[in-house]
Image (cartoon, rainbow, N blue to C red; front, side):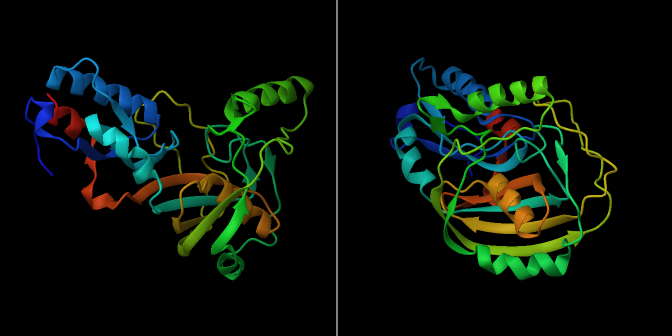
Length: 270
């Protein structure tokens, strides 16, 4: 990939698509704001469009496709492509957001949780299926973002001293898991969360807890929530589970080997 761009956006009639390795604890919108500011200064065009082709959760890293100029018209097309993730799924507890943006709210028995048990259920998750998205997501419910409703319900539950229950607010979507592979299994206590101090998103502290963790590779269709898959895997083993790590490794024809850091992108546009 080029390490610099000309100053004339007209030199890129189809626009620019950059596979950015999104930093941990940055929102996708944070990345777009940074790149847009740099691109406007670089190309000298105040109304330059910059967007992305499929958001990544704040605690995820990996490929975020940033589209500049005419390439923003391709965002929907790029979003339709199959994606691949490497996900860490920790068993024995749940959080309201199904990841570490929220603290653990419930703990579950681990009697049915093992590497062998997980290997036995994984094949049943491959194929076309209905999936209910996490309530802490950007899906729209009656014109309101689901995460806004989730925050309100969580505050009400906390004030009432009862567990958070999202109920049947979201309807299921049809998604496809093309491949689901167990890469590794660990019974060791969860390690300390690495906080580089760069992002603005808080991370729940689960260090030292005995939560068996599986690393899985997921190849899936557009609209698949890996946090929801973690939830469903926990339920399949008669326990609870949440997403403890996530890295998008393929998207829109790009692999993680093609990705560039945000710092590199800003240097290209300096």
